Length: 130
Image (cartoon, rainbow, N blue to C red; front, side):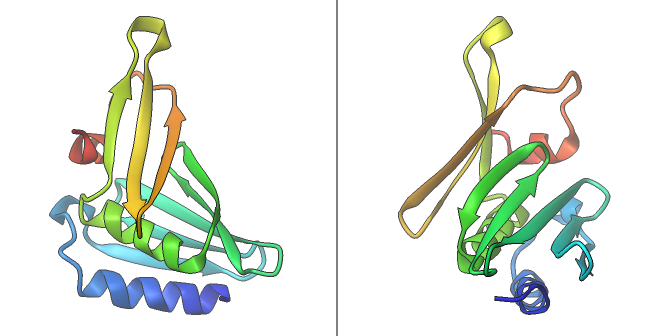
């Protein structure tokens, strides 16, 4: 799927979804030179989707988390899960071993990525924290 189709499908999907009000307005930018779709959730969060190889898979980057080799449909679903608050962020471990986990489930497949917590918790993380 090319990036223009990806942007259009995300636009249609988010326009009919029950998006967290703090994430509004949602805007979408398409960069043809450095092929990428950026979804802006207000001023709180940007999600970058980059096509890989023959553009049949995408890399997904969101607030320091990244997911590789997502199908276009899974990437669109991930954007919707975050927009609607159906994805979750939780912490694991203690003290210096503490990590944050962004996780969601798409068609029975679990997606999970870890990163170190930041000093201040951004509002978008608070909205998805469980």
